[in-house]
Image (cartoon, rainbow, N blue to C red; front, side, top):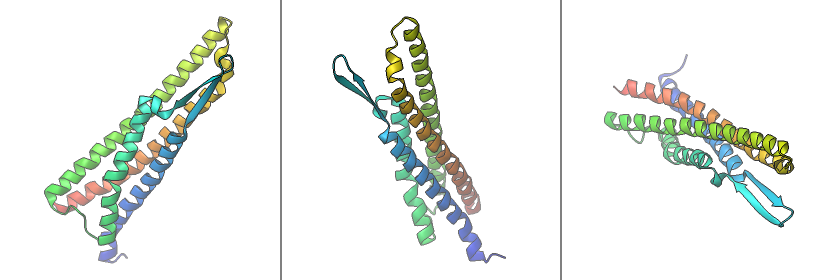
Length: 184
């Protein structure tokens, strides 16, 4: 059987583990997103165009959700486990932490939706445009298609990692809800 001290540490440790998993998944998502580029070369004019995540607003939003979580939630979790006390131990301030976590959760959820939705729409538009230009006898997109597909596939990977991080945050949020109910 668990000792009282071990039982009281189980939820904070589980919450920290979930937040560490979230951090790892969000950092992986961030790295994939930051490295997601595609360079298209125009052989006729010898010019290049580079497509980066920053050119797509939904990807910028995913980045913002990543950064918001990292800077607002992880320091509090580390302090809670290392010291054994929450930074915010007053019940009214626990409500503030509770609702703040819900805001972060909402940012992550909408970041996932924005990333997956934009990637799906843009990839589908690229497919339709490629079919159209091929039909009219100007298959210019067929030549650069693989780079565009790779770019959007990496967008899917980044958004999927963000989704897994969001799910870990849901578990952490449930644990934080339990902690609040125990304080009351």
